[in-house]
Length: 69
Figure 1: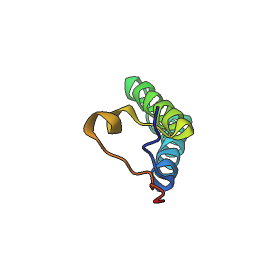
Figure 2: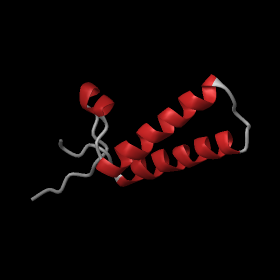
Figure 3: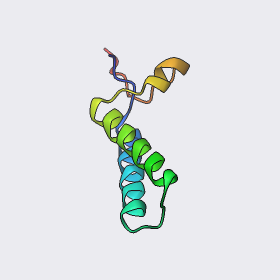
Figure 4: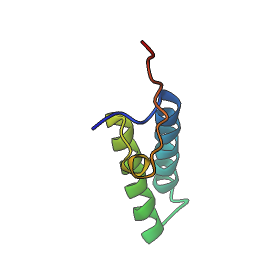
């Protein structure tokens, strides 16, 4: 897998995952939507850790800075 996520993109995803987890933790969101939100937060954390987003790969997006030699 080739990296396709930049530093800013990873920070935003982790921040959104933390916000989603806090919403569920403090019972602001409940029920099925809470499970969906936690699943999305898990995906955001995972993609941030590996610096690869499959959706970006499908649409040809790349937010990772490329070193020019």
